[in-house]
Length: 306
Image (cartoon, rainbow, N blue to C red; front, side, top):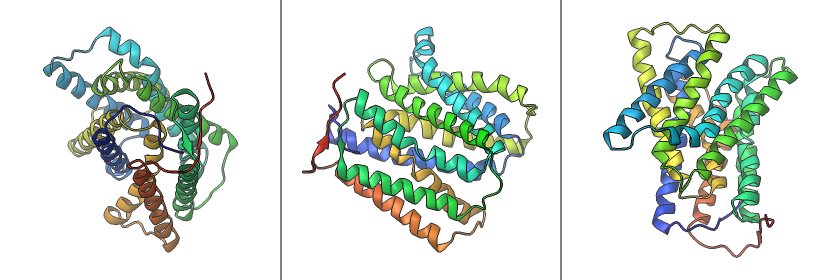
C-alpha cells in the first residue's frame, strides 16, 4: 500500500508512527494479562470497557471536555462496531479454531486498505502493497506454526469474518472522525458504546458478572489502562496523523508481541519457524515505516474518482 496524501507535518507523521507502534504493543499484551483473570471473556470485556470508559469521562471532564450527546451521536457507529467485534470474535473462537479466527482477523489491512484507497484518497504504491502482503503471510505463519488445528466449524469462520468487518469499521470510523471529534472524545464515546453493547451480550451468554476478587481487579485495571486507555487513545490519536492503511497494517504486530510476551512471561515455546516469521513481520513493517519518511519513485495506484 502506500504513502497517502496528508496535510500532516513530517514531525506529526513520525509521532503518529510511534503512537501506533505503542498502541499495538499495548494491545498485544492483552492476552497475557487476560490469562491472569479468572473470568469469562465477555465478562472481562464488560469490566475492561466500563473501567476505561468511565476513567476517560472523568479525565476529559477534568480537562474541560465533558461527555455530550454530540459525542455519543458521532461515536455510535464506531462504538457499536467495536462492541460487535469483541462479541463476534469471542463467539468465533468458541465455534472454530483460534488459528482460523486470528488469521481471518489478520486480513484487516486488506479490507481497510481498499477503503482507504477508494474513499480517503490514499494512494497505493506497489512496493508497499508487496511489503504488507509479506507481513500478512508472515503473521499467518506465526499463528499457524504455534497452534494445533482441531476440528473447525464454518459458522465460526463466518463469525470471524463478521469480527473482521467490525474491527475494520472501527478503524475507518476513527479516521473519519478527524475534524469532528478529538481522539480523546472518540475513544471515550466508543468505549461507552462498546461497554453498553457487551453488557447485555455477556448476560445473554451466561457470563458471570459478579464482583471480581482483589487479584482479578488488579489485572483488570492493568488491562483497562494498558490495552484500553493506552492502546485505543494512542491508535485513535495516530490515525489522524498517518495513513489509515498504515495504522491498520501496524495491527499485524499484535500477534508478534503476544507471542513474544507469552514466551517471556508464560514460558510458551516459540519454534524457529515462528521466530523467523516474526522477524519478517518486523522487517516488513520497518520498511513500510521508512517509506513514509521519503517519497518513492514507484508508480502509485490512484483512487478512483468518487
